[in-house]
Structure formats: structure tokens, C-alpha cells
Image (cartoon, rainbow, N blue to C red):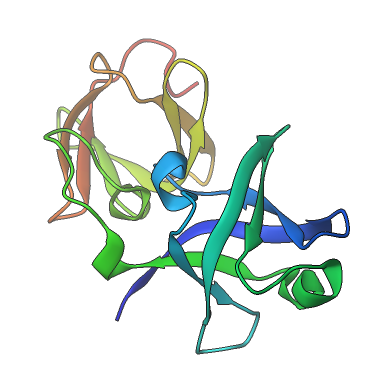
Length: 171
């Protein structure tokens, strides 16, 4: 079974068993839906603790979650520093031109002439559009706005993305 990151548990919140999560998922409304099953992977552990989301709410830049059967801070304290993951069986089919984060991160980026630019390291969500962080072959980080004018082709099978190099994009 494959598991995919949806967030990192960074702390507890209050005394009623809530945890503070930095979301790393492309579909937070689905991943953190009440009743959803997730796996908590503690550092160094191979097997997850399976939890069911009892409550979920956005708070500042975090998601605050609580789980069924974990009613207070003492129950969830052990989860700090752990990763929240979703099992591949719970991934849904996406529309054309939609991709999961795990499909994009690690892709090689090329310009339209076939010149290698670098590799996608992470994804940021902004208000208008996502931004992909690319570690360039020169070692520098570049930021690609995920808009049709820049992203020309995404081939997740071959882990290859083609972009149009607009003036000033990589400077």
C-alpha cells in the first residue's frame, strides 16, 4: 500500500484533543472531511496509527483536527512531529489537467526547446494560483506560477513538465 502526505502535525491546540496541522494536500476539503480516515506516521515508525477525523477547521495558516477516540491533549501529544498521510485507495480520479501534488513533486522541468531547467521540489498555494518551487540545475530556486501561459505540458507518466520561458521568469 502506498501512502501520500497530506500534512504535518506540528503541535497540539487546547486541551480537547485538537492538533495543529500544516496542510500539504491539494484537496484539503476532501482530505480533512469529517469521517475521513488518515494514517499518522510517527518519526521512525513504519506502520501508521489509523485515525478518523472527528472535527476539522481552518485556523490562521493551520488546520485544526480532532480524531475519534482521542478526546484530550494527553491522547494526541504523542503525535507531534508526525506526518498525516492518505492511503492510495482513497484517492479519487481527477479531471483533465488536474494533478495530485505527489504527481508533480519530483518532475523534471524543461523549456520548449528541451533545455533542462531543474526539478520540482514543492508546491505553494497562493490566492490566485499555485506556485511550483523548482531547484534549478544551477542549484538556485525558481518559482513557477501554475498558469496556462507558463505551464505548457504536464506528463506525469514520464515525470516531465514543459514550460514557456517568459521574460524574467527565472531571474
